[in-house]
Image (cartoon, rainbow over all chains, first blue to last red; front, top):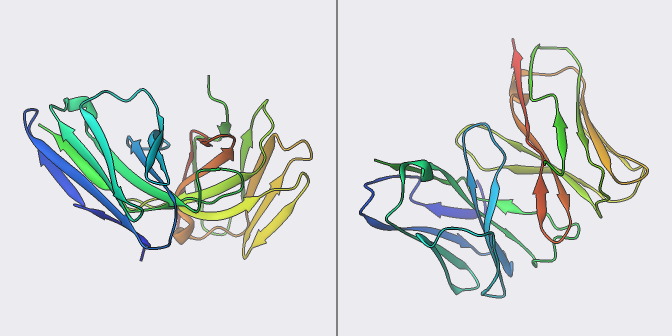
Length: 115
Length: 108
């Protein structure tokens, strides 16, 4: 079982809907990440939170809005998504955001389909 | 331009065969990590290599980090169907940089 929990596992939404993806970890990690992964491709970094503050935004469209309510939780708010946004969305955490030698622990992802 | 070149992209082999996956870059990394991802799951860390020339073994898996810390390899001995998955190398800079991945299928 993964130590990073993501909900929901699957989400189907229309282009006008508003939904949120949730991620939770209780390992005391202070860095959390959102990745987008297309089939048979590597994860692409979207956002990094360090000590609950946004430290990296990889030029992600504003229809994706991250939020870190506390050190254990990370949300990704979705609004007016496009069909090309359909993908697996992975959350990960690490002890700090200094990537030096730090392994990232991944959740099993949310499979998102945009109709 | 891919910062980390991973090869081969696809590998389909019979159970019991050996294989090697390569991860190459023109840049130096402070460390390199290898992950395996199975369908429907997130990537799981296999190993982190830190020192140039380092060799780490994990049962039938052998990982090497190049002397110049620009490349790495993963060698699997006597592959089993349970080894099937997407293998990802990832280098540490100010963030984790992933290679394109190698899809391995081991047939019984």
